[in-house]
Each structure stands twice: as C-alpha cells, then as structure tokens.
Image (cartoon, rainbow, N blue to C red; front, side, top):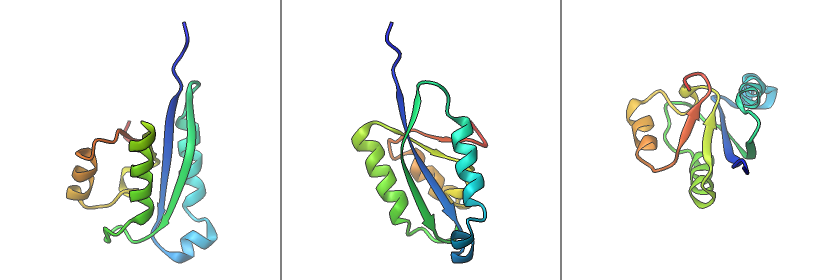
Length: 106
C-alpha cells in the first residue's frame, strides 16, 4: 500500500527587526517545526515575517495561505501566538479553508 506524503508550509514570525537580524526566536521556531514533522510529511516551503503581533498586514502569511490552497498543503507554525494575539485573527484563519497545525497545540 502506497503511503501518501503530506505537504507542509511553514510560517515563522518574529516581532522586531532586531529579532529577525539576530535570528532570535526564528531558529527555535524552525527547530520546533522540523522536530514535529514525521516520516511521510514534507516541508515544501517556508515563509518568514518580521512584523508585530498587533498588526494584521502580513503579506508573507497571505502568500503562505495562497500556496497552501493551490497545493493542498497544511500550514504549520511553531507557536499559535506567532499568528497573532488577536482571537478574531486566528478565527479568520480557521475559516479560510486552509488546514493548519500549531506545534505547541497540536
């Protein structure tokens, strides 16, 4: 029996330019995502955003969601708070039709 390979698209977000340049927090997110993936699961693309959690203008997240829809992939994030601290923002993602996994809250 052939096993289906599941495709994942990672989204990482750091809050400040300093964190982005220093890789503070970014490497930990990348490691968490990679540790979460199992055999038969493939990380096909990664998107990184440097943006405050209070802002909702996230072009990299929008690109990641488009890619997921086009390629039937699942969005994977290291921590739910990397999407945003606004419950409505997360609820909109849940209604977008894209499957997503938060490693810290599977």
